[in-house]
Amino acid sequence: MNHEFAWDELALLWNANNFGAVHDWLGERWNHLIQSRPGGHEDQDAQFLQGLAFAALAFHFTQNHNQDGAALLGDDALALLPKFVPAYRGVALGPILETLNTLRPQLDGLDREADCPMQPFVFNKFEYRMN
Image 1: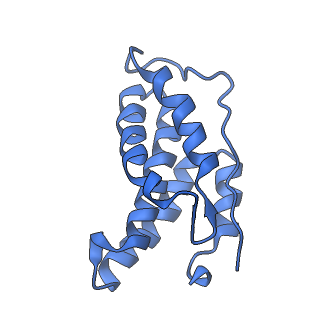
Image 2: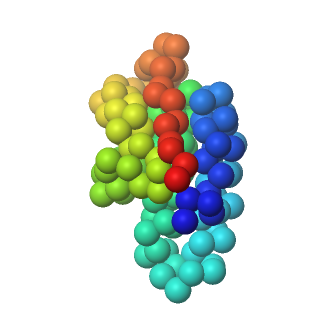
């Protein structure tokens, strides 16, 4: 079922640090899944895309002076994504979780509109394998 997800498109956006567009890309596909599949929000693919979207927003927010939002969405991503380790639909979760686990503790105690604690913002690239 990997053909449903054009991970190459997502990887280009992710690896370019365009996490706002990553969120939009994921949101469109998530919305389609929850409306078109019997499981709706409980669908595994939908939950996976939602977890990726949470991670992308955390990365976007921390770079755009929204540290409270970054912490909240980082926590949400860390709650959802580990159940898909080591990979899901060809996407490696280790690199994403590593970036989240590096960023998340640095957000504690920051002023809500503080600069990103990682200067420059360093993140792992999006890794996937098409079958």
